[in-house]
Figure (cartoon, rainbow, N blue to C red):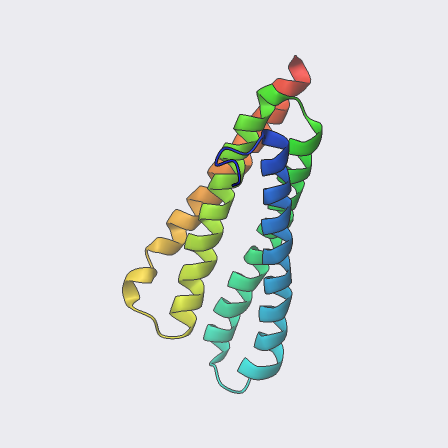
Length: 138
C-alpha cells in the first residue's frame, strides 16, 4: 500500500512527471493542429487552438522546473513550491482547457474562465518568484 502523503522529494518527481506528460501532450496537440485542423477551423479558431497549445507547453516546462527545484532545495521551500505548481497546473486546466473548448464550439461560459486561468498562472509564477527571492535572502 502506498503512502498517501508522499515525502516532498517524491512530490517533486510527481511534478516533473506531470510536466513531461503535459509537454508531450502539447507537442501532440501542436502537430494535430498543424496537420489536421488547418483545413477544418477558421483562422481565428486555429489561432485560439495554437494559443492554448503554446501556453500548455510553456507551463509544462514550468512544472518540470518546479519539480526539479523541489528535488534539490530544502524542506522549508518545498511547500511554497508545491503551492506554485498547484496554481500553475490549475492555470493549465482553466486557461488552455477553456480555449480548447472554445475552439471546438464548447459552451460560451468557457470564455470568462480563460482569464481565471491566466490569473492562476500569474499567482503561480509570482509565488515561485517570491519563494526563490526569500530563499536567496536567507
